[in-house]
Length: 248
Image (tube, rainbow, N blue to C red):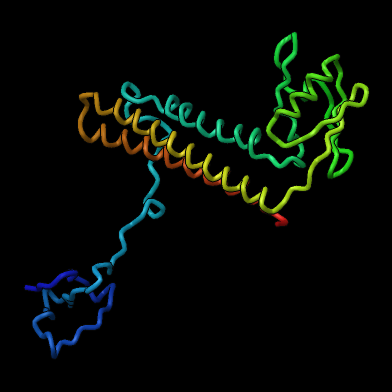
């Protein structure tokens, strides 16, 4: 009955909605059916009802698998959780501000006895906002100083007896913004890893001969878990960005 690009026929009940229609111009659009008044109108934009997004959809129950023989949710959670743990670890090792507490903890020191985190070889303390001091417990002072120097944090340690003085350069706004950009890239990479995990488990589900409904529900559970971890990645990025850019 109606034609034209972008036109959409929508049936609306006046009990719940109202729509302005010129009945003198379009008298055939108005009908009285079963005592319920109805209006038929078309919306040029085609967007009278916005399509529901994921945020408005009810979450799928992932407390237990629809079919344990096909899908182990603990395995799905463990696999995707490892992506988040890697992101958090990368943020600590590569995105921490040089003045932040624990910024040097992750630095690995190579010795004749093996590799050790710097905080296991000595006590790290902040003497001032621009100076960290590492008091080494062992004989590996030179090795520790070298590890700090080649850590990629643009630090120039100085050895004084069994301690290492580490001057901290002023953290510029540009440096903070660069770190925030790198953090965003790392988060995006994590989301790619999560999507790959999702695809892996869904492909595994599709290989089974269970009913279509069961397989569909299992796929929804995998997707829900993936969405949950994506939200966690976004939250971690938000907190890290806030930390990096505060006081800029």
